[in-house]
Length: 276
Length: 307
Image (cartoon, rainbow over all chains, first blue to last red):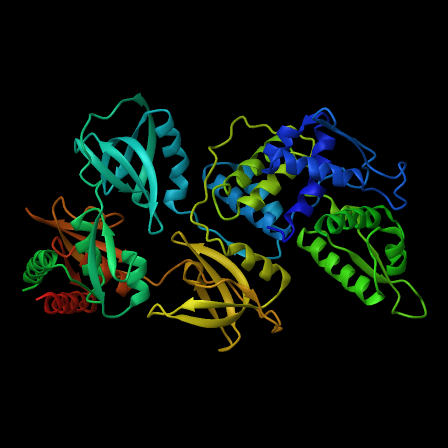
């Protein structure tokens, strides 16, 4: 954002009011994401602005006593200012995603805007970003989802999306497994919102309790931090996840809890046997 | 005072937009209320004002206006450059842009999105939202992306601390060139001014604030790294109905009662080893030999460590 958001707002208020004559102060506050009080202060400041000379003839004419705002004599500022490079970049990326979702008009517009961009930027949407809107709308409407996940088709009743360690997950009730399941959204291959509504049976989810355990880091601290979320303690939902992550780190980190160590060792020995 | 400053800036913008002729500094200081104090003070004020307007995308045009002396500079803002101008916009295109900026509203660039959206609504065109795809959402954009984009746009070098392999902060001074995302992570592509080489930095590994540096640089030729990773093709056996995540995007080669053999491309040998270790009770690496020995060596380290 610009270093001076208020200046941006002052300049942007004029064309907005010009194109929405009679707009309420409350509506302006909502649109510009500030309080009505701020908007009123802005209007008082703008009231004093205009062409050099600053006689009533040159000033912009604002009326807003009754809470509804009109402007006249604002020739210079009545059209919105051009897009900054950063604003262009965000629009281009947004349009790229819309194009991926099948809009050809978005592609043409994207190319037009890209010609105006001096900054190098490239964006690769992840599956989680692609599917999140559909999933959210399905949750809101209590709709069933048909997903293809890990090579299997499943009908699921979605509950909530949450993010952890830079991954987005979907909590849902899986009708095939007849149990609560958590899906990594980035691993969903295809997704379809079904025209069916259903409520999940009242089953306690198995993975809703967090556990904490202590670890010792031997090397690759940055990777450990990124994968486990901590360098001394790890919070986890399932042992399956913890053991998988500790194994994947290949010896960079050691479990300290005696019970977990024994169980993990058992598992590693089993894995080694597969190679003998 | 801040409000006086903003009043001066709004008036300056209007004055420079309204003038057809270039205005000299003396004319500007006389016409726009608020330029007070010594001539050095007003000069400094004016320089800062120009910079503030620039950060809003408002470019002040400068030209030498005295035929005999070039130190007399004139200033104005071209209305054509000031205006939101991306050519003819249809109602459908306006709606698309509204959705495109909506995508950022949960992200670190929410402010940018809001400002764009307000201006799109000021164009006096009715957005046509029929037949549009669902609004996308862009998540996990790091908060420091704004400073980086601004530095790239302004051609300024930056300084920050970056976590090395041991999770220790290291000071870096770089010339930012571009930004890209890959596998849901954002990267800064930049020229390391110490080592004089082009490198990528993961934005979530930048552990300090981003500061502008005083160093100058000439923008080198560069290409953003391509999104095609070197590939590592692995043959593996997977226990039937287990490790369902690892078999995504893999090719079935053969099967027996308990095990299925797959071929899968990983982005690197290291990633392959790490993924197979994650499911080591149910996945056995068969080829290449480097991956097999990588996995068995790690298993033996893990056993010693926990034994």
